[in-house]
Image 1 (cartoon, each protein chain N blue to C red):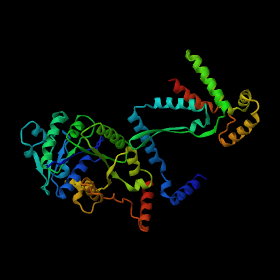
Image 2 (tube, chains in turn orange, blue):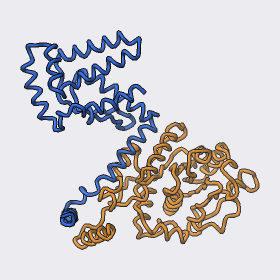
Image 3 (cartoon, chains in turn blue, cyan):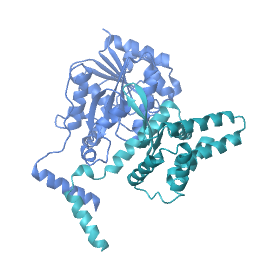
Image 4 (cartoon, rainbow over the protein chains, first blue to last red):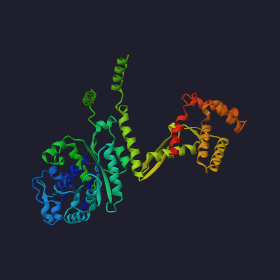
Length: 270
Length: 188
């Protein structure tokens, strides 16, 4: 079996790379695929927190590279889903502890026994990014409808284009706020896609549920009712090659809803 | 009165469709972003862009009379390709004599290219000529020199031009300002 290696990257920090990695990984595992998540953010690891696995980590990716353990020993199984496992980043080391070749080797080994290897990339375009991209053949570029995030995504797309190994890259637009788009205070999905001219793989609405799900260490895809969870499940379906329409994020259109919106706007202005 | 207009504006805003409100913020972001990304992608600095704009104005104004302040130079992305979009509000096309005159000026310029200062003077002269329609007297005499037969025809043209130009064209100093800006940049 040869699995797919997908790097999740963004350029800018704080746009939701790690959240996206955790959720797509969990969603794919729920569908019965074998998934490994690799946290390559050495020194600033967080993927373990989002999955609620922070207390189970014994070995890290640096331990594997420096041969203190076998690769299999370092893989931490998810609490709920045995299909999902995590290869954590070392918290006490920096990006230079790993080389691109070493990471590529790990990805190549892992894809032998898994359907998906998702690489959570650190922010920036330096060594950490180069490492994370080394073993991947596909990329998901996470951005938000803000100027700085889009500019950085554009830079990342340029870098991905120059990499021969990356066969395809897609855009995931995170933290979309339909009410702001409607009032022309936020760039719309079409605006962003047009500017970056990159195919879209997902639109994730801003969801306060993300905060509580991070607090609990449980990805939001596990919450059947959350809109962001549904959006992430759709992304997973699209990765699997299914054509799923993008969620209609428009606000409720009833009369009462309109009045409520109007009052909310007035309140915000005051 | 101020209070009354405030109240009116607030009430009017409430009934206006949402799309019309706050239009600025989003389109400002989109436009700023497009420009900055184009610079990132092509390594063209604002200075070079302004120079390019100035040179394009110089070239095109030999053939058409245009509203230089409204000229837009943008980069647009179409798929993988970047297109240079130039939007020129044309006031009127110049006729053959004017074009010939402008080209002759250019040839003179080329001949004098050896010394930079002379060249600059010539350019300046050319430009005042192009903007001559601003001051009626100047342009009239010039057009007379181009061809006396067509003066009458041109006079009517000039009138319509004046009507179509909402800005106070009587002020002779005004249109020279953007010219200066362009020139500063092309020299730099």
